[in-house]
Length: 329
Ligand code: KG4
Ligand code: ZN
Image (cartoon, rainbow, N blue to C red):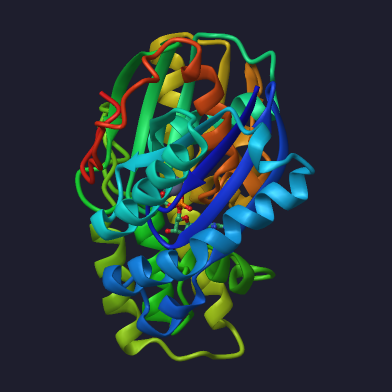
């Protein structure tokens, strides 16, 4: 079975082909246009998706060496995400599906992020805990089985990705902030300054990152580089505060659920400081990290989950709609 996956929920226009569980192509066009605005401008994102979607889909088909006529099904993200951005992908998918006479199925972006771990480890077995960390979400999930998901905790305010993006803006770095902060933290001393770790003392599995951002804002008001403390030390300390919080809560979730495996997902899961700290802190159970190319928004995860879902859901309706606030549970 050959599946075309389409992803346009935010600022990545992406298409991929999955065939019997294998990713044959994975094309992502990241919209650089938002960089100068310090965040995603929804209207611009929709226009960029509309400009790029056919090119990206064509390239994914070309790179897969499969002919258009041999695609059996299209899976497309219908939420959560920006409404205009989701609309471009969903309308394109429905049009193409009608034209080719093949089914089109909707995919939950969050579920697809979690399932990207099966691309890293096809033998991944239930139950496991997933730390889902992206630009819009910071959640801990107990994945007990297929479609048996329990939300253990989530952020009360900003997502971890937002903390990276807003922090980067304060540091005068570009959007998206995560990779920028990771780059500029290199060689810095993560213990140079202690930033608050939100809700760290609380037993709950909730997160909070808004206080951290405010604390950075005030700190940078008066900060001046000296021979003893450089800006990169502060950037490294800020990154460490986010990572420490995520790892602490992940450890607690593992204890609470008693699982033998934990995984990570979403754009922030690409962060090497997070990966290293998780590897060093969680020794007794299996840790699985998706390939970096499957952490940031991509359509490989949409095609892969599409193939799994195609075996169990109705495929004869184009009646589904976009759901910008779609939840996993
Ligand atoms: O999953 P994703 O691509 O899009 C959403 O579904 O939101 O996540 C994007 C978020 C952004 O906030 C970005 O700054 C962050 O992931 N991110 C990172 C890294 N790469 C992307 N954060 C920390 N370190 C990274 N290397
Ligand atoms: Zn995402």
